[in-house]
Length: 347
Image (tube, rainbow, N blue to C red; front, side, top):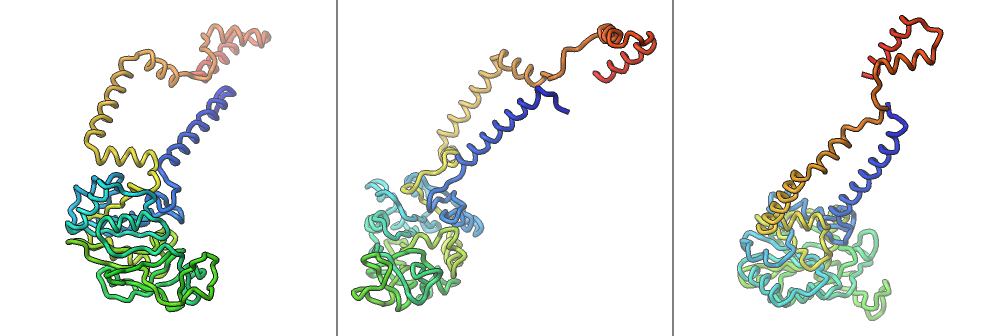
């Protein structure tokens, strides 16, 4: 089926396709923790899936200018553990969104980015930042405390219990507490993963909600609650669905988290920027035009596609002479019959 010369070419083609496929997969997926395009246990791709399943229009926000184009009273913006500070212009965009009627969800545990954003928009709740543990009401370990829903609210109608994963607590201020831990939870102030004499057992808030202007700010003391691997714990998935289902639009704010995969970033840029789409189209047309004006390239491609690994064609006279040289004892009729058969086989 294949000549000896075709196997190296086939092997090279297979290697090329494998390398290209690997690069495309790597450029189109993410391995970053809390990444909205990370489908592994530590990603949050399921948040995007849940929002789309609820019928909400889901937008991944790379720049806070996108808040200005949202309809606030129909939109929830989700910010999970920001790794850098929002500057003055960015916080003003988020603040205007909230005060105009938008809902902002901030989930943070130990970083400072969440509290800085809460302060900038005018919310009173703050994340404590100290690891929370529970010795009784737990999941796989004391670092996975279970929290009870204590207030009837739109976001808790289908959830009775939430499970955290190495989370913290919320200092509510005047905010309404939606969920608290059991009376056996404590803050591990020295982070030795043990209950010490100076660490007090008591029930602590982990989810709050408050009004800011005409909008709402929802604060959760553990972004890990929305990890792919945590949504099947307790009523975490139901809690997420309740949040996204009452909004027409979900903004997944990744403007201050780990960078998106290159191909995803390019696709979003083309989707959200008319200028980028126009420039990309112009470059594509120019590339096709340049290829069409390069007959050498086209002819080489056609030659390569039509190239055959078989030997150069021989005439029937050449084949007949070769048969006679190989079998000098054959008569002319037999040589002619074999020659015709070989020529038909080559055709």
